[in-house]
Image (cartoon, rainbow, N blue to C red; front, side, top):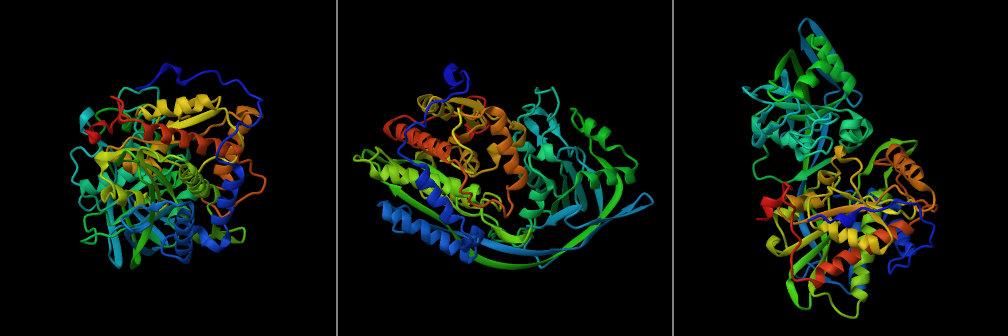
Length: 534
């Protein structure tokens, strides 16, 4: 239920820093600790994980919080680490042409099949538009196809991204159909031998380097019971330049085919080319840890509010300018610090909250939201009694902002809770300014939403209280270009964490209000997650 008072003037303000229970100094101390080189980039299955989990357990016990999983502060998350050596070249043949794409420069591939040797030989390449099957609107990009032995080549994002048409999907607002994880899931349902997503920075929401870095070194996935034989043998990405070469070799116009793929009634088309590539894999099964603690409710202890932040980052990987430790200070040292500070504030209250407050630090977010997926599939607390999920991830370190961005704005009544808390801080709500990037599907709250738990993911926006919107936008752009998923995401003494403290305070306020109520926040009528709650 959205309220008309959620948006109001965004005039620049010059007031002094509002007081909060949560301070920039305590947040800085947590971030500095957790992003230290000694944590080795906090990757699961490493010494960095052991040190991170130990620190979190110790801190939560020191704050006086109870163990959140029976008598344990952890939840086991069975994972398998897959180390892949892809073929250095991908061979494209047919139509009188022979192309050779270079690993990492032109393509990135992996496989979720638990096989030592993966080989795809002379697999027919088929352009399947955006790789979407949406029966509720009569959309099928695989119409009439038997994908056995074939490789789907698909675009990232939704068919109506970048158009003026929002009558089919949601215009420039990405739906789950536009997310790369969906593309792989649908290719599996279609029986495809392989799938390659065409990367384009604007449509994907991140540069090619992010694709490269996220698939370098060992990759984690949830353990399976059968080795995932139904997954595509190869899943991956190709650059836009490589895609242009493909379509040129096939005698087809990429721009024209994309235009056709945006229209209802699109039918897939063979590129009259085949693809050959492979991987050699080694496997290691192990157990990672979600960290979970609680403050038990005084009146309705069976009803829970769950705060989440992922504790992991990318570990030690490809060296950039002589540095190979991906410290993850902003991503997600800021979220971990915020949830720790919120836990500390709850614990310091003279009266216990009426509902149980759970603090969940999840593993393997950077590997595909795996820790939160495992929790959602194996919940410690019944989902029907889970009031809401409040998620904190990759928050701004650039000072006080007048606005609060709510990603996925319009999904649930939690928007109104955030708006009320923001107004108390003399701030206003900004709906997701880049809905085409699908941020609502890119952090751990999404796994709660998928199983019907109302979930919110928000952070301070670009409207800097002292320096304006242009400055705020420039700081975000600088972070994405120079720090995001890079070794340079390190703690910086020049950061202004007053805005981060305000965000943490806002989430604390929302949690307190939810804890004092007897009702549950609801999904809005237009949300695709509403039926899951029912």
